[in-house]
Length: 345
Image 1 (cartoon, rainbow, N blue to C red):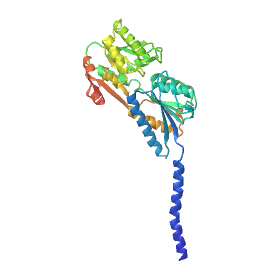
Image 2: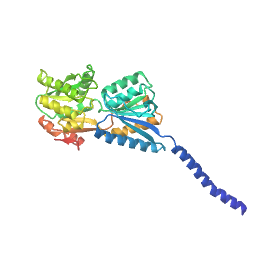
Image 3: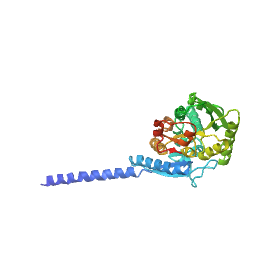
Image 4: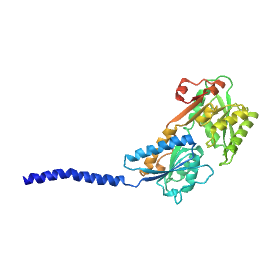
């Protein structure tokens, strides 16, 4: 009887010991210090509210699977304004810095100053993508990677070709407006266009300071467009190839007011609502989830240099049907389906 009693006590004690050991182990894992993630953002207010909440929620959910969590410090960044952090806080001490938007990427890179702190870009503008690609090519230990803020090169031109193919008459002459930085921007875009016979492209570079305010940018773009419309080029329409924080809807209205010519492409839905024919832009929520997946890998120890720069997986097409009609364009059923929910008149 005593032997059976001892065995019973041992039998009952084993699950209790296992429970205690499991609880101690879980508490040890659960008390791992949270990751310190700094989120720098220079997006417009509507996009920021949506994108940042999705990013932070998705990253938290991913970390929770490993009983980890993140403390987020969100900092608003403005072009030309020095980065402002809480007193005594240093960006280089963070576990990860995530920059949403051009000004955030620029200020974040400047503040990190080449430190080893992983730096994840989202909505990376094309000029910074080129710069980062060059850095990564020359330094395999580059601490930065990211998701570009534009569709895959040539995607917008491929859709434009489909749209222009539906119109008859003389091919359009389209002026590409972009910041003057040599011929590389225009030549790369022209190669993407593929020399389609239904339209011709001319370069319209304009000069404006990198930290110019909205009024200066509107003036520079408006002057370049007006000169092209009144000159020998006889430009029929304009293509806005800009990475800018300035409201693109204002740029569209400025060009239309000063030239009487339409804008056939601008990289934002707001610009299409203002009268541009089309836009092709990253889907904000999808890009935020992609950024969270990359952030999880970086916090798990992945090397940024081993994660390639990538275009967003999902992009949204917007169309202005009134502008299409004025140009004699009849969008295909396929494109109308692609742009469903983002059609404007």
